Length: 87
Image 1: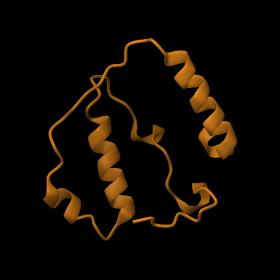
Image 2 (image 1 turned 180 degrees about the vertical axis):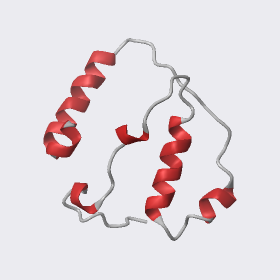
Image 3 (image 1 turned 60 degrees about the horizontal axis):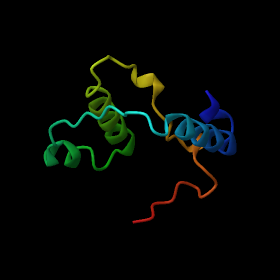
């Protein structure tokens, strides 16, 4: 919810969460590599690519998570850089 309100609030809450997690164990899940063809087929559709990657990432969790909880990359949520491509 906070991530949709204000960028500074989101960053502040992230720092707070990092502090709360310091010196505590973190569970990591590493899955199979994403096939190149799966990425190439979505190359021209950034939203489809992000949805695919989000779903693949969430599927790594031993406890199911809703994709609704993911970060929004729509233009209304982009930071002031305009969402430029920095490649």
